[in-house]
Image 1 (cartoon, helix red, strand yellow):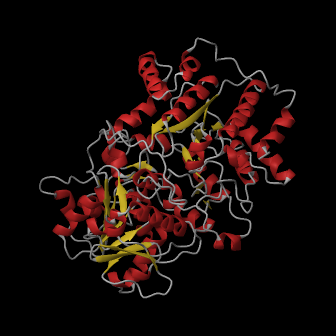
Image 2 (cartoon, one colour; image 1 turned 30 degrees about the horizontal axis):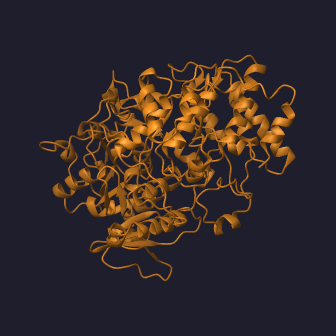
Image 3 (cartoon, rainbow, N blue to C red; image 1 turned 180 degrees about the vertical axis):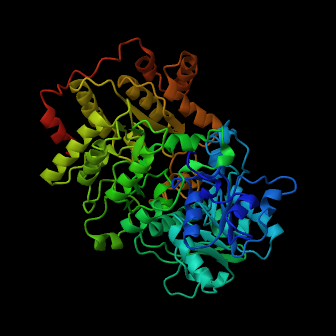
Length: 630
């Protein structure tokens, strides 16, 4: 906090507003997270965007929604509107495990304390404000609102819900990354516009008594139709996903009760210059002084990390990144990134180590379609599945250049890559010898210079059948990547590990698939740590399959482990190596007629030896060549 004044943060109390000389504010933003004034935290980012327009913005982090509601009243009526974000996480995911058990902590709260935000935060905050100030407009946004913009299945209620616009009674919903929509809202309101005048802004949703008058509007099956017929729900999801992933989108509307939910197309992807300008805003990059002496775990995790880009074109079935941030990569310039690193190095607590230099997928920096005209016509939800798109530029040269420039900075001792690496992209055969060579060089340099002892990758499963449902590459590719990793470790005398992420109970995954996963990972000498039971979250392909039992793209029925008992039966296979799990796993295998796997899983043979059927040193060039064969 050295050198910082209280007025360097956006005000969170009337006294802090008065320090700035303010008697009133234009916008009061309520957030389910603690206030960390850092561009990785949505409330701070939107707050700084609003501030940059000249408006007066106050933030109320984690207001008490019980009792006299004084936190909702402390700034009174804003001159323009209230804004609401549940936080960087969906409140239900934040609160509950995949088995609907209450989590013991909250990484976005001081000292990780849970219980500082309500379930369905956006709805609770919005309804309180509507009851207190019925005539003040409310704008909702953030991931919780974004993923619930249409009628959707809710896992925690095990019920089909109307759009969050209906339940929250909000006037405007911003979906996706909100910088451009909020700036447009402010511009129109500065010109005297009303709430109705905001309805033409891209990337917003609103309620209407009538359908939009436009020949190109897509009208989805209604809430009533989707809630009564799961096949219709699956077909509806396909339309939403395909439209959301297009470069040129169309207005979508859906009848929800008496009203139509109208969702406008998104803004074009931000330019490098536009995203650079955001990172130039006067963030303190620190928690608000009100948290002095307390730790905010989510901040501690990213404090010494640098975000290089947004978006992900992987399109994994279970992931919300592309549906929220978009599948088109928005990259910062080297100049902007290096400038932030320089500022970070001037922090008295900085020791010279960057914990991460990456994004949603670490190695998608500066990657985009070679021919944008083809991208405009495309409606693929994944540019990486079933194979990497031939129009995608997967050249890692710019990322490699960035790594090297950061490594050469005098105040950087080590730059680690903490975000997940898509090895399938780096190993993709581009049909260009020079690019393939650069990408091979990227992998080697990543392994040799940028691993903090453990490299995170996400094969997600070992079964190609399940991986096909997940929209992930074959597990055979992970075997090849591990051989490269092991070879580079041996050659350079490094003691590093791969930390693979795996998911159980994903739609399409059976007990037999999980048993085979246990056997295969045992034979690779893994004792798995980074694992999770599939958690259905709104607006993902996997959740739609979980709810309906259909694959929306084929309308074929798909197996789903739905009950807590079935989910736990799958999850236990991650931990086959724990003695206390052994008898229950054996019982499960016998019950499912998989007795032949008992010996493979529990026989006392040495699995620690590395594969001896492949001499990496002798066939190094052939290995890299073989990695590029489809």
